[in-house]
Length: 495
Picture 1 (cartoon, helix red, strand yellow):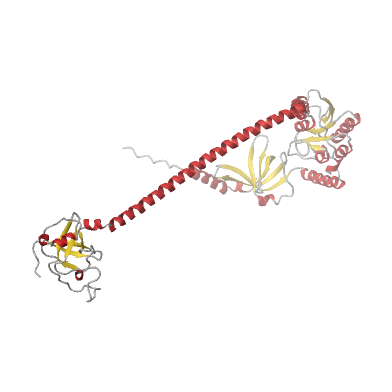
Picture 2 (cartoon, one colour):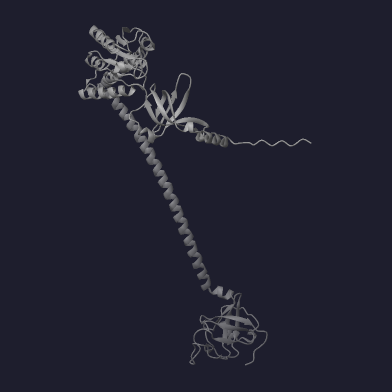
């Protein structure tokens, strides 16, 4: 049987970077070393840290310097400086890259001495007022003749000529070749400035060259060049090196350009833009003229109209128009008022109808009440309700048993007829509440009548106007007005 092979270990990216970082940290040679090279991509961060690259002819390494170490530096560094960096190489584990963390930076050669000379001359000229903005001459907006002081060959002169011709094909360029680096460069630059200024034909002078180290650009830091620019009557634009390069000539010149190409753009106007602006202004002017003419014509027509309106014919026409408008207005007012009157009339009529209906209903209601009351007071109604009206021979209502005696003729009126009868007997009843022993006044008296009307005396029958008889006796309950409710008895009552 074959032996089982060991399973290979799998590492994470973080583990690998950490292992490499540990190897770098344990290597004493990488923890303290001196590296010589040329600076490039120098960048001061807002946090105070410094980032740059250190390179030689065939390679480069990324470098960083913490803010605490940057503050210990006596002078700033810039691209192109030859330096010796002291520090350690370590791995930045997050990105998996290594870089040189600088602890100190030392310039090589005579760079330090040149920087001290630069600062000394800068301070001297500043105190003399040569950097003051009040002494700087304005750059003409449209340049016809451009003077250039730079090397006869090189990228700088090509850039200046190319940009100038592109912006203004008709511009005149006068080149005064000068040595811009090495021995005698400062005097050559001074001679070129003075020669162009002496012509009296040049509108603007560009003094500059391409980028380089501080030694390469040193001619533009000489006091003689600064004084030549200061004394020049023609406006001077300084266009030395790259944007990060700064020379004494930049401070003294009337205008500083970051590069020679930018100097040409600042000196020469873009004729295409100028022509476009002229065309736009011309179109705008034509538009304004058309608008002005149109307004003048409108004003003329308005004045003519005002003249016609203020004349006799115009006033007559206005009067007619006023009459027409007034008539139309009166018609509208009358129509509105008539409509309002109709609306009011309809509203009042509706209100009157409602009131009349209400009053009629109220009168009908009162009539019904009175009718019901009248019906209630109608004797016939009481008779219809079962009551009887009893009266004697003198046609007086019998309200008490004390008003009749035995054998008195009486007449009993019912709902559907009249009964003539005679009193067979009188039997007073017990006193009712509210009655006195003296007699039987008021309501509640009862008369018990027995027998029929067959034995009615003849004289009793003459006392009644009606001859109707109704056999049988009734028990009558009399009220104060002679009416009483009767009940039919089936036999005679005992005395």
